[in-house]
Length: 111
Length: 108
Image 1 (cartoon, each protein chain N blue to C red):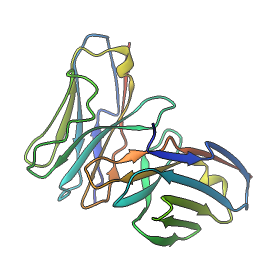
Image 2: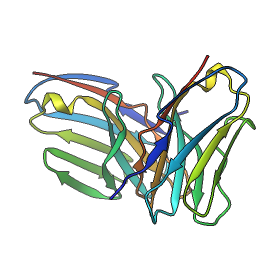
Image 3: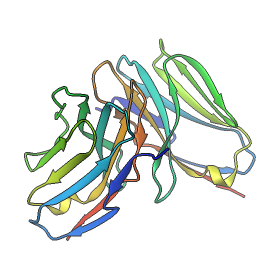
């Protein structure tokens, strides 16, 4: 079956622009996570969705970051007014219980 | 303060060597994961542990809940094992906490 997919795979944008990153989780997975991996750094939790519950947004670094999950499936991470320090690989993972399956990531470069 | 500490940070081994990567954590957990990330590649979950020991092929993962410690062992290492290995723990809440990874290079 299909795994977690993310799009685009690469995104180059100019400072100050808004970007949207998409995650298609594995069908039936109720949990969806967004992470950020900066160069040479570990994975940083951003946001967690579980079913129809309110998302856990405690990892979002600023109010420029937001995410939605529509119909318990596809999720979009939006970064407004991008800054150079937002450059990173953004990873999505979906799962059930304590499992996680990762997508390939979106590499965001802010010039 | 990092809830998850891995050692070593970098490891170079000759093909065929037995390899151990260690993970210590400071919080109570419901699960621990070992993840593998190849250069430029995605992240693959190798193991999920809540107790004891698991084995997949040449990979063995153990966990000691009382000591808050886990190890990942690779027997008969091979150059294709070269990757970053990441330990991740899940306390009772929603978040996973990640170690910074161990970069393994296996030389033919």
